[in-house]
Image 1: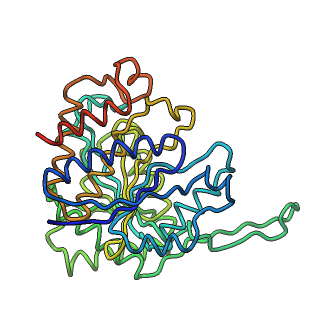
Image 2: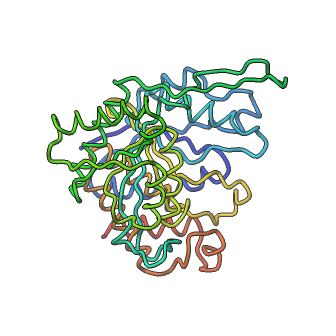
Length: 359
């Protein structure tokens, strides 16, 4: 019997509510397939920061290293200045645990509305692999003469060949595992960012030729990528890109697949501890109202199971979510839709957990 240690971090706002339902569903799948989950709760977030001044101590990072995965609800508190919790918890965890891949499936499910005209589930099913620990977001640079008319701000995009190679390798492996069209698209800006994306493009083709000759390689500038994601999302199988471009196109992807209420993601260290989370924020105005959509967090739980190698359990969770959506009991993904349908965060979790036990 497989056994895993999972760190649970509900975080802020509605984060603990959606995480509770996701854990309920993941446990239902685990029970069905003889998997043991040993969970530990952590209360890091805005309330703890306001109470103690502590964000995420180094000791917690060391504890996280002893888990098989981390499952996060949401980070963001209305009484804490933006950036403090995000940098202190999310980015610190990503960087300290070297979660160098941000994995974002973009998949339209039945009865989920996309803003794209005449597009359905058969058209929207691709994955974005975003480099997650280098580039502009590491903060190379600084400010001189701040507050004067002569102020200068510099923030540099820096990549090593090793950072590029390991991201590309993971993306090629994802394309091979999906076995959809076996196509990997590099998203860059080689016509302007001629140093950094020259490195990415050379590494992309060298690795493809030597290690992944079965995977078709394509290239698209980031601006073209955003246009095609809207006009022809069916063209894509797997997209790989750098940190900044990935941050932008994955949020576009979330809207293409029906909004933040359905989108999930993983911060992956293939050799270490990874963290999974819904993409939507903490939605503080809905805290405690039991009306927020937990589907994104449940899909994050499905990703967690898949990452742990429990593919049958992960597929079961996805089938249960699809069965729930196909039932038509939920007319939309918003809190208003949930209320009008007579549903709730808890009822959705209960329904999908029940389906997980029998689909």
